Image (cartoon, rainbow, N blue to C red):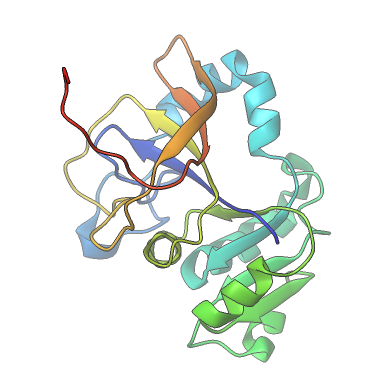
Length: 205
């Protein structure tokens, strides 16, 4: 069985929309695209080993919008993400055909149509699969309890608007932190793995 790792940039109030640039995702009139940019140089310098893990080449699982953005950008900047051309890129969409995927020209891209396809992929043999961005897909994975690990880079800002990583429908689940780092400019790298069901109790008893 393959692990599914959701790897995201988020704000303190849980927003994940358009971290990379102003035009990345302007849906719902979102005006704060590119909110990670002022922090990235400092975070990179302080967290070299963590960033290497973040950019480690694995098969990736994307929603349609993120896939289309990545298919346009990464083939032209493959030197920034070694191995990204050779890994398998899975895109989940009920609106695309495999021909549509192929026509975007990103080598080794495969269409998945639904949750059952994702479950079949997870139950296959192979290495870990990382999810980048893809907010709607992340919600589907949380809802169906298909997330094994989280890799979150949390930035010291609040936006008050935008798409959130954890929305209504997320399954209750416990996680254990396996590694973390706080940079001087306040960016928090945190790695979590699933730790069973949520436990409750009364403080002080």
